Amino acid sequence: MDPRDFAAILTAEGFAPAIPRSLAPGQPVPEHTHPFDAKILVTAGAFTLTRGGIATRHGLGDLFSVPAGEPHAELAGPEGAEYLAGRRHKG
Image (tube, one colour):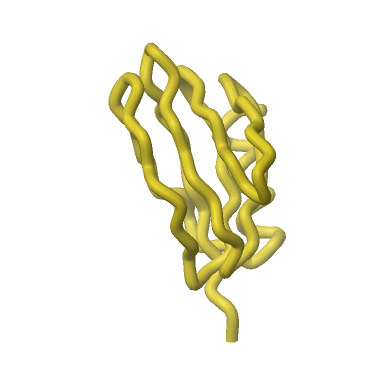
């Protein structure tokens, strides 16, 4: 998926415009939650998302969601990761 298609999906689903984010090579992000729904598009590199004890690798072009309040952790791949993150606040 490309960023333009991702932007259209965010708009259609009520998400705010995407924010570019990145993780350094091998950077861990300990388990945490967000007070918003997140929809992510990986634009470079890769990272592993762990939720509910299940680790899933996401690479270039992968799209996935993390619901508000869901505990998850992240680990960037050896080349790091760049991604676009859309947020949809409840209420």
